[in-house]
Image (cartoon, rainbow, N blue to C red; front, side, top):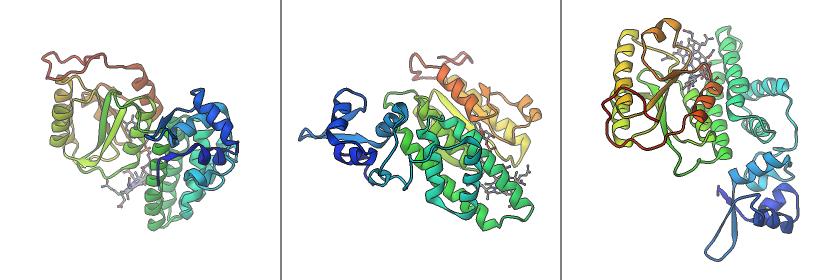
Length: 301
Ligand code: B12
């Protein structure tokens, strides 16, 4: 599906005249690109940002590739969680995407959507599975589906500025949990970072190589499970030393990082949730890129 839409398509999606839409574009309210032939082309994230900022609805969301009914229901915080749980357990992808996009359009931050809606629903799914009230296939299906919901949120947020500071991250060897790292990527993009998740089950060595090759200013690590605590701590601290020598901050979070383990780890900051990371990431702004290793163990921003 194309990420670009014509003013006519966007006008139909919002339910306004094409001339009003073109006026908003010409006033700079919705950033647009021009084709070689001089036609305006609008990107989905710019359109959604406009709808969000101006409090507009969507008359025909399908025209811009969104699930039917998106932008028509004003979501209530408490019911959104219950509805999202229902959609996740029954495998209703369109409803799940619609709920999350509605929350986004209504102005809820990506970090809040992840921390206050998606994460608690997965905690509940874990409890239901443990008690035998949810089949394994339902839990797995919910994970697959949630991956696609996060992808939709990523489309809504956009890819972030091309010249934004670089952030990379993922989960470590033995850790198959994908949701939190994918959410971290979207939250950081929303905070103005050029963020890319490297995926899950990443060997420590390859993360060190990624720092040496790509010189990110920030690396996030999500830790939901640890196979061998001693080796984990030793490898992690070597990774941190590499990161520091390249001026890269390390943010860690995740269920497996107990207070005891954290005592032995070196990192720039630990965050309980994605709102904490968002606040940290919005605060730090790299001044100049560090192209070669620095000798001092201080993080340079
Ligand atoms: C989905 C899931 C799986 C899926 C994951 C698939 C995938 N693609 O990710 C799969 C099928 C792999 C799986 C497997 C297993 N699982 Co499991 N799983 C879950 C479940 C239901 C959800 C986890 C999740 O992704 N939540 C969504 C994320 C976003 O929420 P979160 O982890 O809480 O993250 C938040 C914060 O921690 C923080 N955060 C996290 N990372 C980071 C990183 C940064 C940088 C920052 C800033 C913040 C941050 O912010 C997030 C948002 O608020 C949990 C239930 C639960 N209570 O969490 C069980 C759970 C973790 N699993 C459990 C178990 C037992 C298992 C298995 C052993 C089951 C089995 N018998 O096979 C295996 C073990 C796999 C392994 N190798 O370790 C138990 C763990 C119990 C324990 N503490 O030991 C749980 C708690 C279920 C339960 N209630 O018993 N699981």
